[in-house]
Structures are given as structure tokens and as C-alpha cells.
Length: 189
Picture 1 (cartoon, rainbow, N blue to C red):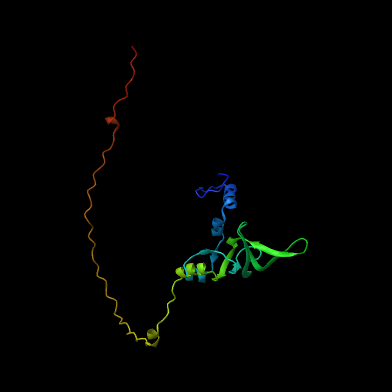
Picture 2: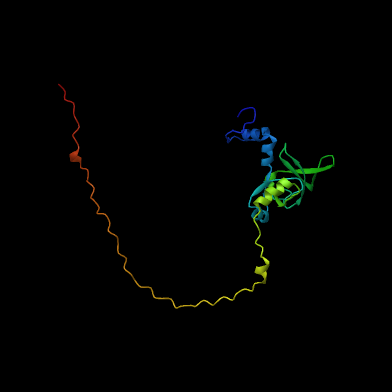
């Protein structure tokens, strides 16, 4: 991989090159790398599996020592690709408490922050409309269904299946050792 970041980089199996690609990536690419899975309810509603996380989204930690903790996002570090959740703290050696960093792959969005108009319009464009009943449908009485008539099962007639004509097999010619030409032997003079 080149020293500078390239959008046309072909992926490598070497972890050092993958880390270098992510480390040198510009912020607009790192923003996409901060995508987080949506809760099943939101996934069905918006028709998408993951979305870039924002400050104010309510998330739940799915993996790690803080598994099960949920709260709103307080801070996001684009440079380090870390997410900080309000109330999730860790004690330092000197006794002070600081926010604990969580990777985006270990959390799930349970509630979206739609304060931003651009994000709201993008999500609402994907939102599947809920099936709402109109007033005429609400006042309409359901029609009673007619009971289905049950007929005794008819006896199956046995029908002989005619085999379609198959191509006649042509016997393969057997190779015999007699048909082979004898090997030439060198004659001494």
C-alpha cells in the first residue's frame, strides 16, 4: 500500500495494511466506518441494517464487560473510531473516573436522534409506511364468511404412466489389442 491513503486500494489479508488503511482514511470515510447496527424494530421500520451513529442516539452495549448497559451517546471520536456512552465510566489508577470508549461493532442503536433535518429526511425516505385504516374502513362491519363445504376425498384413479420413447443406445465399439499396430523394432545390420 502506498504511503498516502488511496480510494482505489485493493484489500489485503495483512492486518497491518488494513489498520494502516483505516488509520490514514479521511474523515468522510471514517464517518461511514462508525456505522452501528439498528435494533430489530428500527431495522424493519427503516429498511436498513446499520446507520452511522450520532450524538444523542440511545444505544445498548452488546459485547464486552459492559454488556447490557444502555444510554445516550455523549461523545464520538472520529479520529480514533470510538464512541462514548453517557454514564459508562471507568476508574483510572489515580482514582478519577473517565468515559469508557466502546467500538461501534459492539453496540446497537435502540432509539435514533432525529434532530438533524438531513438525517430525518434521509430516514423518512426509507421509512416503510404503517398500515393505517381509513375512517371508512373502521366503520365498515366485517362480512361473515361462508363456511367451506367439505367434500369426501375422491378416490384417485390409477393411471399407467407411459414411458416416453427413449433413444436407442448404440453399443460402444470395444477396443481390441489386435487393432493396434505392432511396435517397430530396430533391426541390427
